Length: 59
Image 1 (cartoon, one colour):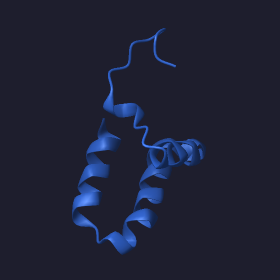
Image 2 (cartoon, one colour; image 1 turned 180 degrees about the vertical axis):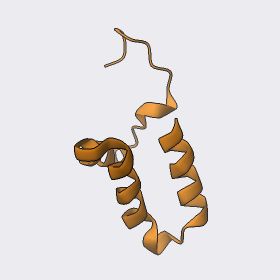
Image 3 (cartoon, helix red, strand yellow; image 1 turned 120 degrees about the vertical axis):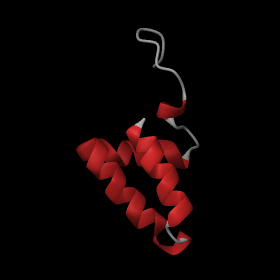
Image 4 (tube, helix red, strand yellow; image 1 turned 60 degrees about the horizontal axis):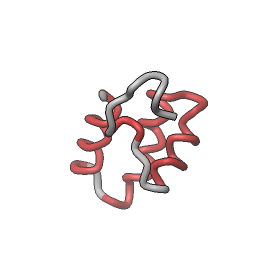
């Protein structure tokens, strides 16, 4: 949830020309080596943190 809040703020406050670079830094901050996976998901329109997580049901 912290990631999504920072992401929303970044998209609101950072000029479009710098957004992708800043998003990459933000993803790395939160997800480390998995940041590329989250980038690919977001490019497909999937935001895993926008929905409720139900353990054993969500994949």
